Image 1 (spheres, protein in one colour):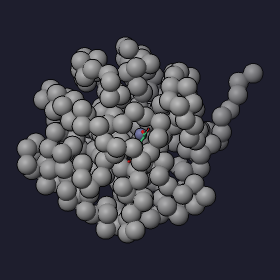
Image 2 (image 1 turned 135 degrees about the vertical axis):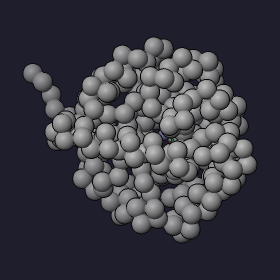
Image 3 (image 1 turned 90 degrees about the vertical axis):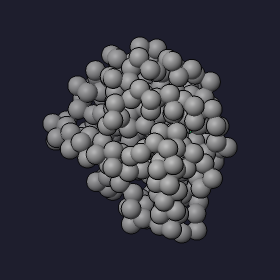
Image 4 (image 1 turned 135 degrees about the horizontal axis):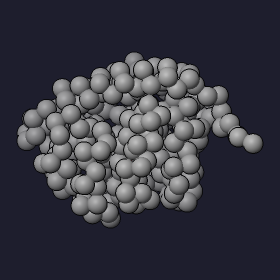
Length: 254
Ligand code: DX5
Ligand code: ZN
């Protein structure tokens, strides 16, 4: 008996949508820094309200953290919540799979409305079959590496995915301190990545760290507590964007 995880969207409609999103997000990332708010820091009792606040602040994409309590020592939310978020917003959904067995959940998360699906190199030493499946589902593949994982493990696959994400904390929790070892990884990735690659960083990104990430080559900045914990989200969104732009022009030019 096949089991449905939740309301499934029509894959061909989703595919048309994701092709447009792929193009527009790559264009965005090329033309300037993109702040990618992590809903892990949102008020889950008022998710729709927080999504609206992020949209009003200027968000162009949302980052959703999926944790399985096995690959990372925490649980977050799953397919039904992604589906519910899909109903609240037209923004691209960047789904970060912190799962030991991501292959089991690609289709359910895609059907729930994920546009980007990122998997960890630590559980997929050769991620190409997963990228193939993500593309077959009409979504955009990304690859993630944790702080202790050498950057050399992901370099062979940069040409096979559209997004690469350097973790700057050990995944599992929001609100942790930025690990600067991510910066050298970003530099190494930027040095060899194609121009329209989305180069992302996640964990402890905020007012004091975002410019350094931009200078190292990131163009997509996952920000949780430093954005949703701010007294004025729009002001913080603008401040982070300005700092990222300044950091980028200091070295890497968008
Ligand atoms: C951590 C998650 C992050 C997290 C970042 O496991 O992958 O996306 O939400 O949160 P902050 O920005 O608070 O470090
Ligand atoms: Zn994340």
